[in-house]
Image (cartoon, rainbow, N blue to C red):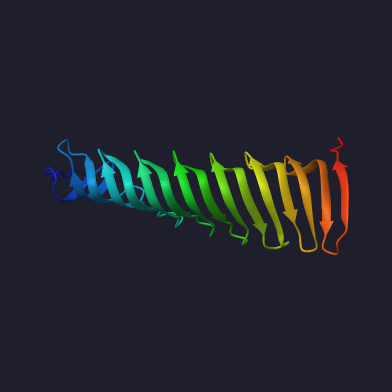
Length: 193
């Protein structure tokens, strides 16, 4: 391990079990301020540090799978606004808290589908709109822990369903409104098999 620490200045050729780092440090030798790190696994982080932890604006690139996060951190975890490009080609733009999608955000799925709305603990939760490109279906309503739940509107090319959902299925009172002016009112009852 080489140790070329000088408080507050750039450090070059600092290598240890945390990887290589070039950037500012505090009086304790911790990464602090702006810096660039190549981690032992080959991942790269460039951005702000606070007392040894990623904190503030930065960009993290995953070497093994090509994923990339650009946004804000708080005490080493994704927090605030950020964009995550996933290895499968999907993308999330929005709020993070404690390293998870939390708050308002938009997820662009690999297949072209889009969800725009509220998130909690990495799951669709709260108000949101899911658009399915292959079927031209759009769901606008409430979500609970990743499933359609509560009042919602399902929009299809020639009709709209307005009603309640439970576990992503219509349940209870609802109505279909067809594009030729006819409405069908009824009640969904889930039957056990």
